[in-house]
Structures are given as C-alpha cells and as structure tokens.
Image 1 (spheres, rainbow, N blue to C red):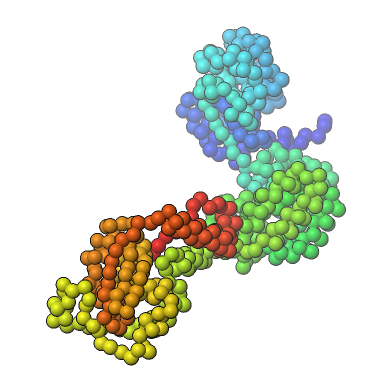
Image 2 (image 1 turned 45 degrees about the vertical axis):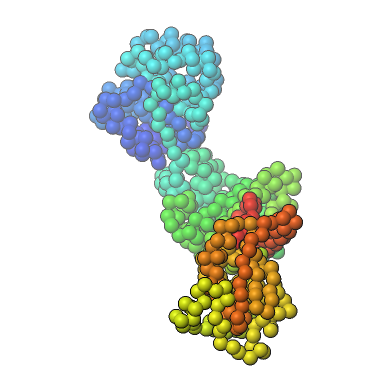
Length: 563
C-alpha cells in the first residue's frame, strides 16, 4: 500500500476533531441536534482550513442511521463509504472541471430520483465559484426549492465570485485562518503519534510558512519527516523548506534598528549565498517590524502577533530603548520600497539601497515636541507681522518706559473737554523716550503702540491697522486706515490714548485722529509684505520638517495679527 500523507491519514472524522473552526462546528452540531439543517450550505474560507472536511462530516451525520449524537458513528456502511469516497448517495463534484450548463442540467435530472439506501442525496461541490454564469442560472430554481431528499454543500475560497442570487439561497459559514499556536500544538501531537522528535522552533517555522492553513502545514511536515529518521534537526528545516530562519530575521532587524549598515550587508549577503528568495526575505522583514511595533505598544500582543510566546519575549528585548515613532518610520520606509524590491531585476541591490536610505533618514520628532516648536514658530512669526515690534526693542522699551503718572480727580474734570490732558510730572531731558527715539519715528510709533495695546487691549486690532502719520513737539497725528468704525472706536478712547501719549513722552502732547483710505499703491505694498511673510513661513525649516514627517502639503498660509 502506498504511503498515506498526514493530511489524509489524520483527517478529522467528527466535528470535535476539526481544528480551529469551533464557531462553525458548534453551529452545525446545534442545527443537527434540533433538526434545523439548511438544504443548501456554503463553506467559504482560505485553502486548507477544513471546508470540504466539514462538508463530509456533515454529509455523514445526515445519512448516518446509527448515530446517537450530532456526530456520525463512522462505523456504519454509509459513513465508511463517504469516508472512502465511493458513497452511492453522496456526490463530490469539482466545480472547476464540471462548470458547464450541460453538466448542471444533468445534475438537475438526477436529483429527481430518490437515494439508494440513505435518507438524503447530498451533492458536495468544491470550488463552486468556478461554475459559469449559465450554470449558476440553471441551478437557481433547483437550489431554492430542491426535493426534500436533496442537500447541497458548497465549498469555495472566493465567495465574492459567486452571484448574489446563489448566495441568498444558501446558509453561509465563513472559516478563518488557524492560529499559529494551534497549528503547532496539532503538529506536535501528530509527531508524538508518529514517534518523531521535533523541536518547537522547527514546528514554528513550518506553521509560519503554512500561513494559517492546516493542510499546508501537514504537507510541509510530511516533507520534513521524509528527509529524516526519528529526529528532526532544527538547522535543516530552513534549508529543506527554502525559507529564512528566525535567527536571520532577528539579525537583520537588529542591524536595521542599530543602523549598522556593514553588519546588515554581511547578514544579507550570507542569506543571498544560501540561495534564499530575497523578495520573500523582505516580506518577512516587513512582517517582523510590524510585530515589533505591536509589541512595543504593549497591548494585546499575544492576540495581535501570530507568533510563539518565546519569540514575543525576544521581540520585547529587541525593542527596548526604541520608540514607537522610530519603528513606525522604519516600517513606513520598507513599505514604500516594497514595489521596487518586488519588480527589480536586482533585488539584492534594491534591498541594500532601501536599508541604506532608511538609515539616512533623521529620527522623527515626537508629536508633542513638534507642536511646541510650531507654537513657538507662530509666536515668532506673529511678532514679525506688520505693526509688531521686534523682541529686542520691546525688551529695551520695557526697561526705559517710566511708570504712568497718577492724575487727581480735579485734573480729570479740568481736562475732560480739552484735547490736551494735564501735563504730567517733568523729568530731565536725557530721560525722555522721545529724545532717545526721535531719530527713528517708526520705532517711536512701534513702542507707543505697544504701550497703548497693553493698557487698552480692546483697541489692539484697530491700533495694528493704524499708523503715526506725523509727530511734532506738542502733537501726534494717528491715521486709522479704511474704516470709519475703527475711527469711532478710537475717538471713544481718545482721552485715555492722549493720557498714554503724555505719559510716554513725559510732556504735554495733543492727539489728533483721522482716517485714510488705502490707495492702490498701499494695497500693493501690503500684499507684497504679506507675500514675503508667507514665503518665510513656508520655507521655515520647522515647517518643512513637519511636511516631510506627516507627508502633507500646504493648503493655505494666513497672516494673523495678535489681538
């Protein structure tokens, strides 16, 4: 007798023996127990996860006359025939090779006849999505209202290719990929039955390569056991499967984290000499950094990282001292370069360039630090906006400006209707701010406006849009631009403003307010100045770093004036 592979030798015979699909088997057991099994059932999911196996167990359970529970007895004539694949009343049809409308018409003719010796005539159609549209249409009416003695069990890996009209007539069960640890435990149990000693590290490599498919895992295990006697050497497993060992992946990722390019190139060259597929190595490295990022976050890593517990411990040690931002940046770089590796005629060179490029990227700035720097930049930019004194002058002015003199109630009543307020206390000529600043009227106005905005904050927006048009020994002329409303607001505070002027110049000063409509030249000058400020903001290094980090673009730049 020829050798029977593990996937067939240990194929589940009951619902409890099905691995990793408890949500489906439990539903079917309850349906059988309550006699509520649908006449058409669709099993969908990845390859090798148990779709056809569950369909066979269900067929045996429905036709088994000696069962005492939801599970078949597996000893009666019907169960044995279904297990061996030669049952007269259970038909297994390959949808890929029997996909024409004529074959479906033959099926429709055959279902009219009663089963030979079983309660049901059951049709198991594998890869049902391969049927043609005409075949599906021919099956519609029969599928919706089949004879009482007929059941349809469908299996597919691509349910999205099945017409909605067919899906709506079936009860659907979605099978999921089997977890890595579940596959490892099952293979370890089978190796014990076979008397083969194999370490968990080797089983982990096999299970990881299977990608959540039990049949693939058992096929790979068969390949390994065929090359050994009674003990599997962990060093030979990667060579036999043509995959990269986990040790190599940890070495490569460690060199990347440390930005040790010479070591990385040496490790990669060693893998290349071994004949490994570098595109697969690159994919494994991306998956590894994804797992490192999840482990670094420190929440539910056992659920989100499909890897053995001992590897999770190694990952935690590897990411000590590494921030989530760094891992995210590395992963993002590798993902962007993935297409270049995949389609390159020189994958080794493309791989090396991708890592070198990643090592040259400056470390990312934490978002909190970036926000603080942006706030500081905004403050500096606001201080440089039109009508804003620079920091140096503002500090010097705070040191030189004398305190505001106090006026008595008699002085206030006396000057209530006068344009010129009472003369404050005199000081020496050398202490007067106008003597210090008289050579620069713009600085005089900036300093005076700063004092006005500080003492009367409600006028700050209006003052920022005003200019000092003229100054003499006893008068100061302030022009408000473009708005009579702003001029009226200034007039309501004229007495207080005049008092500030007297305090600032330390002598009696009159205040004259008027309004000016911007000319075309004024508007052009203002627009040019705003354009220069916008260009400076866009070209600021901090802004450019923010754009690069967040992969963004500038939508608009607004020149704001601080209230």
